[in-house]
Length: 283
Image 1: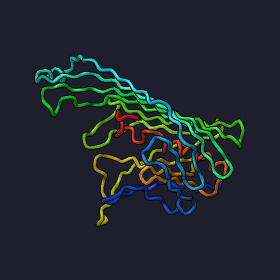
Image 2: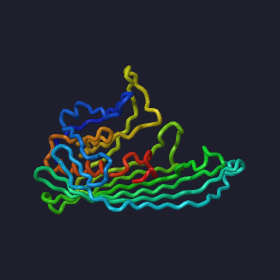
Image 3: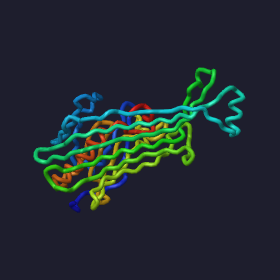
């Protein structure tokens, strides 16, 4: 990999009253190309993405598999005993989802195959009561989300395989929670060929700017806006899930750009982006 990749820190995230977007620093944007992603229209039949000189084949998705179980919960905790006195009881509900998909992505000369899968599991407490506003109210105790992909160059770097891994976990017992803020979750993301490693870091909107220019915190906690791709501790790409854009640094070899494009397309095609907000809504 070239050593001339610009390294910068402190990506600033801003929002107006009407739109949320990534404010890309000029230091990065002046040395990178922004590509608008086409094909993310919500339709899963004959799905195909394109951005810049890159285009995917039709995405082949396997069956979405989901299952769940629910059983009565027995607890001797003081809070549960008090609730039972008001005829408020609870069940424990477990939910699992998984799916897989594959496609190829190419530019004018290079082709790469991508095979990916998602897995999600969640444990919730479901409250039961004769009060309509409370009946079937749910509280997440724990969830685990895993996204993985295998990226295989077809007509270059023969024998080289990149493995992509993204994990997102939440455990109420290990997390400080505030009713008005987003709880902290454990995030991990990277792609590697065994010799080199590209880190995948989620980006969150933490501040907002009103029409009058006043700055303040985002109500309800940080908003997930995209991902940062870091190689050799330098930012080489951005995936903007709010405006559906992919940014890639210009000073890279075409083969390196192809790998980054494969990574970006896989991230865009996964069903869950902000796992905490989308949990149990269906992959």
